Length: 244
Ligand SMILES: *Cc1c(COP(=O)(O)O)cnc(C)c1O
Image 1 (spheres, rainbow, N blue to C red):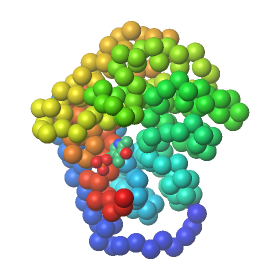
Image 2: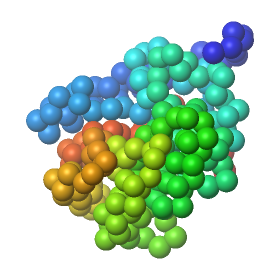
Image 3: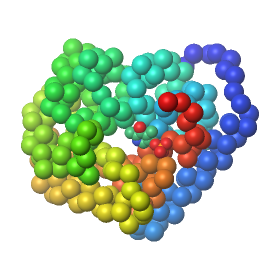
Image 4: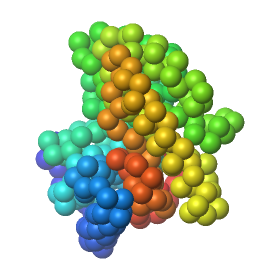
């Protein structure tokens, strides 16, 4: 971290602290309701558009995981994150020509949905003598033009990735379709959890089903109730994003 005097909005800083505690409490409640332990669930903050000064305040409150969406933005903010106290994930749509720029910098890439991306992560890992942890993104709603592998093709993709060096599958991630109500969203989360448990039960070689990443600001409690052990929360922590 570089020592810079960073300007910030005091009010916004207080909001981040307040929201952090609120979300922590909600996660604990959902965990309890689901019969699970708070410490078994990871709270990752989605930090797109958020300035590092606010991200670091959340880290000082106890946040341990942050996730960026865009390679350019991640690189621009990289030196200012408090990475001594938090782990950095990449959670956005990935292009193979950008992979080189993040391998070795991020602790985990959550959004791998093709063998092409996996091969490039593996190749860059070999060049840099490092191994990258990844999650495979699943298009659980089977939506057209959406990232993620189709559920029917997941096992085949996992098989192909498991044969690659310098890349290690640690679980699954999903962004479900936009839903009208809680019942509908829970159906997708539940379907995803079944897939996760099913794959886990198959004990595929070199495939580790440790993390199930699902749930965002509007539905992280429902996701936890349906088995998520990693939630990705942005606007509920940092406030609404005022860009594009
Ligand atoms: C932005 C983002 C989130 C968080 O979204 P919010 O609704 O602001 O909580 C989670 N996951 C991914 C992949 C994102 O891009």
